[in-house]
Image (cartoon, rainbow, N blue to C red):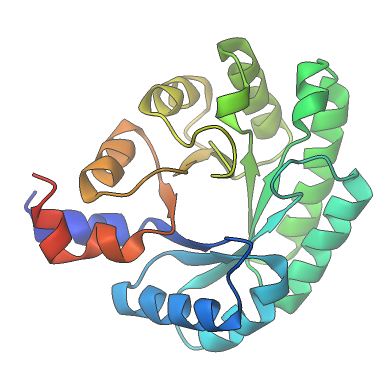
Length: 230
């Protein structure tokens, strides 16, 4: 596969992230232009920007994604439900929800499963909408990663996502390999956090990722920059 083919493959799997706390409307509008230019899978924005992104991307095949319980996952289930419901109403078609990491570490798996099921049922009421469950791998040991993946799948997640990008580290290839070995083919994987080059993106896809979360879309997909990766 040559570089042009790799760029096209990666672009079709990118969730272009606009989640920095300092980014405003102008940044979102610019990000939507980038998303259109490279024809990425989705743009992932803060909840306050869902309406703007949906308007900017109207008529395109690029979906609007937003985050719920972000970045720590500690919101109550009711608040996460309300966040997801408003996001769907405002035009989001993809919800990236952070699990309650403390409950996982407490081994309160019934809490985790109930919460994910609750949000999953809501999301799937909207035709074509999907739920990605963020487990924040940087904060988990191997057993906890395996448990989180199994609970997310049983509770109806469409994707399991590695990271928020706001913890101690982002995605790691060994995490993807572990997650892919645990999850059935029905559940896809999103790697997010620290992916800045075309080669990294290709490596993650080859390891089993169906989506790549990144704010570095232009750098990754620029032919000039891509040439420098090899």
